[in-house]
Image (cartoon, rainbow, N blue to C red; front, side, top):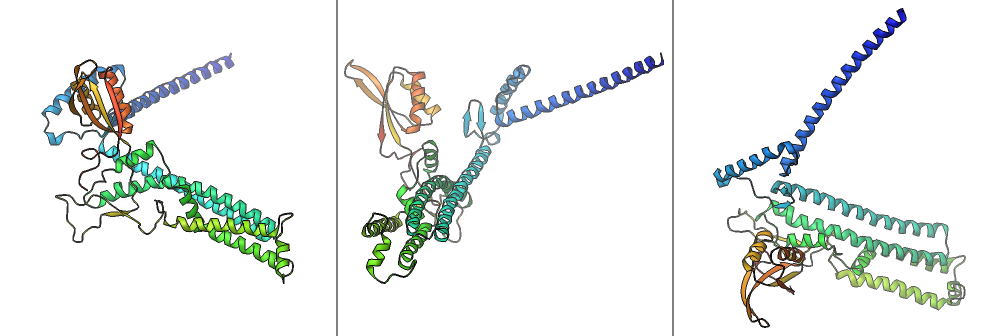
Length: 414
């Protein structure tokens, strides 16, 4: 009986402890839920996202109406800046744009650094192979085989160098037109900066050719490796195991199996001569943006504008090896019977100018309106979407344009 009472008391104490733990867990869960709701609401408000909670729909609708009424009453100078980028409810403000570009610069710098290390890796392969050949296998045939292997490493390194230049191209664009433009007047990038960067992101292209990459890496590193291998082969044939005294003895040692010595010498001279000539002829190719080279051509960036702060010393507003590339430009002729709707849609959604022309269909002898609009090649798909929504019966002719000058494109005055 005494044991039963002790057991009953133990169960009661255990039940009290469990109830206290459950109450504490419920309170902590409720606190966590409140903090989670506050964090989510804070994120959505920071990005101006719609909140999809049922209990907040009415409140958000009333708040939006109140914000609109207050915005009408507020002075123009106190209103929030217009977003520079919108997508499905997301709105990117100027500060967010700068933050995104900084992170983009860090990512591209990291990419360039990774590929720069890969260049060092292939160079180390070539050096180790050369050292092993001369130390462990002092044989003319092994030296020739090592030369072919070094050539393979050079080809791999040239291909990696092109990828390194691809990321360096983007980093250089950010350096010249984003960060440098922040430091000196007129504090604005070149007109084609955004197009050059966007074109490289949408359609990546190697900024340098394989020939330039091959020649540059050969001149920088591999010319010394090939020279050492060529001298090693020559001295090996000449001195090992004893120095030769006649030309016939030298030719006999240079023979590889059934291949005569004159063929071996001819192939070696042609092979190494081709490498040296390639390195010499590509010396004038200077499209590499990741190198510090004497400037073959200066690219003028926008000079000081009216009202800009004048410095005591004139600023040489030029940059070495500033890459520039325009997106392909298109001239679109749109034949439509809804000119006002189509023009407003292009103006509102694309921000492109539209010119209206009069036309007559010669087959139907009916009057039509021809809208002329200059675009870039990446905007053609958006134009088709607008026309498909506003006037599916429209007829469009999109022809490539060599160059477009004016607002939104290349300026008429440098």
